Image (tube, rainbow, N blue to C red; front, side):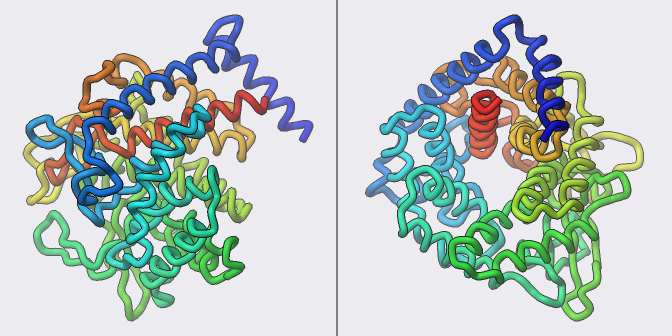
Length: 418
């Protein structure tokens, strides 16, 4: 505890010197201003949407913008459908305003059907960002039941032979030839929090055992020596061995996709919190060090750390092959920013918190935060969904806004507790 106290003191000496004499006061004001801005933007967005109580689910949940700069909404089982309700919960957490509690409940309740979905691994995003936040901030037994049933559904995709949760049912590589029949993506680490929470709620250790087993196998197979990450690892269901290491959304099979690296940092930080397994903390820290070391000057990553570099060649069917363009990905920054606030405290490393603060300020600057009433009423600009698929290039994205708001909540708690 003494060491932690010294480190926190050192942090304030370093961090707040960058923000003036009234550092803590000014930073709380910064959080409040961004909260108010987010409330204004999301209010405008809600006012432009159909009634969430009655409308078709595929017409109401914001995702991004389409090719005509109009609002794009989520399909029924689209992996990001839980982020907009999650953002409403974050606004309630930041503001304490019951208006946002009511909105969050309305939008979350529409997603109960997801609890039995077994079509892919994304239930963690779909259910935990919505019902997980709901249970934390306004707990109801019904929410608990939904989380547990969702964990059961997710668990059906775990195979003891491979020791990982299957992400997609199959995937064809950008080389046009390689077929993956048990693909596991680094993003899958983000679904493990649902299993850990459901294990506590149900007193069923099986859920957490699956989460730990998946995390251990991913640690073994998804990282290079420098702790940069592969996006997709394909397993043999008979032997359990790795068959392929490739990419789906990155620049090339051997490159480091920025958002994938962000998922790795966040996922292993969370798993350390849930288990206190030191190898998870070391992995999160090493992945974070790689991310921070390879950032461009403004601290916001390109969509892939190796885009356009010698030695990295996209597959023949990837849009990136003939378009080695560098676009920033604010979503990868927002995810990493949120993770670093937690990792810095768990690892007693003030430099991570300092990096998170700088990243958050950059995201909140005019370079990345939209003007009021612009950007189809999303908060952040300049994200990349999947460059290889020519999808959502330099657009807003619902999960960028969610993790930006989560970063604000984590920073606010840090300031209030220190």
